[in-house]
Length: 195
Image 1 (cartoon, rainbow, N blue to C red):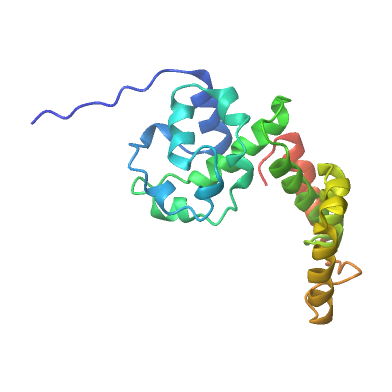
Image 2 (cartoon, rainbow, N blue to C red):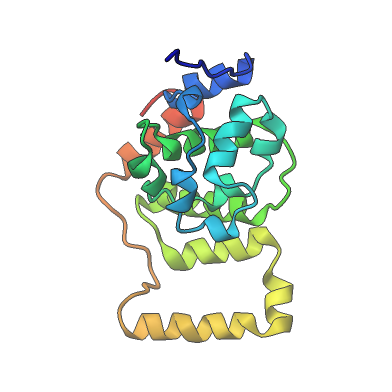
């Protein structure tokens, strides 16, 4: 029996994703195992296997505008389950960076604003400071007025109070000793160097 070769369109973006992530999306044979194991697939506009397929097809703008790359929680279930050992989570992480650099207007901005708020908190304190992060997110996402009108801000405050009483939420951020190293990692990533 003669083996069939997979025809993949030759495109510069496929090579760019491979260079930035270190992963070969051409190895994907669309078994959908990554998508079936994804815990947030229900909220995605593009499933992980569709993202990989679109990379192979050269549909750069569509992928970089997708909210899915920002909704990924980096649990690496897709990576662990992939029968071809493709680190899908690493590819998605590279796509986030490419999306940020591209300047494309995102279809849904809130997931990327949330992502940026988390990273901003880690950059400042060396770890996630939840109260500060949610404050930054609420301001940058433009949800403050709608949250006040809908009453969800009050509901969030009630949950926050319970978390505070149980010692799960700190009013003042706890800073780690290695903050300088964390900031240096962010600087390296901004320059495009590997951490």
